[in-house]
Length: 292
Image (cartoon, rainbow, N blue to C red; front, side, top):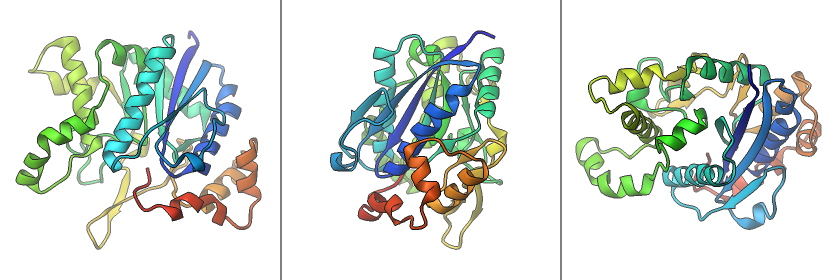
């Protein structure tokens, strides 16, 4: 199989240590892949400049103002995709990661890229659901980790997501009908279907054909394990088969890195050797806006 060029888009608000370690994992471990030819990292950041004063291992650092939770994530993703479209025209796939979401098993990533190429799939993701409610078209897609065919999203203009414009137009309707918010996870699947329609111009089979072009990551499904007493969906944080870690607290991540002997990188070494992890959550403790 021909080697693949990938772009990695990391988006960060206040999880600075997470973002740095994610980059170290990519630069020190993903580069061992025999399938991946080149990796470009674009880092979209909307936190305080003092938290992250200069680039680390990314090729491009995009600084943005901080918006609300869903809009902020959307704007960071949109800005990163725009940068890749303008600067890195030879990419085959784009992998989007929230800053606290690490993928440590390169073999698993390779298997996904091979399936996407062989079956001509445009999107790899999973529903943002729970066991009894887990349809992509009902709950939307996981935006903390997904993969896209870069040439396809460029050609059929899946981006920008443009969350703010959608929110401004339809928020009152969402409140009127269900008293609910506009969720980025659901808007993402709508933008994907819009791109599918641009390609095939067929409303009748739009949903079924769109679904046939998605690699559903069943190894991660359902994302949420249960509903708590307040009605909140509680996420699972670790999928060993995938090597996917999404913990907000560093202790379990530290334990897993040690078990897997992942020990290359300045900030990885600092985490696995530290007995006191208060430093790790410095900026998340200072802020209560949201975390990705």
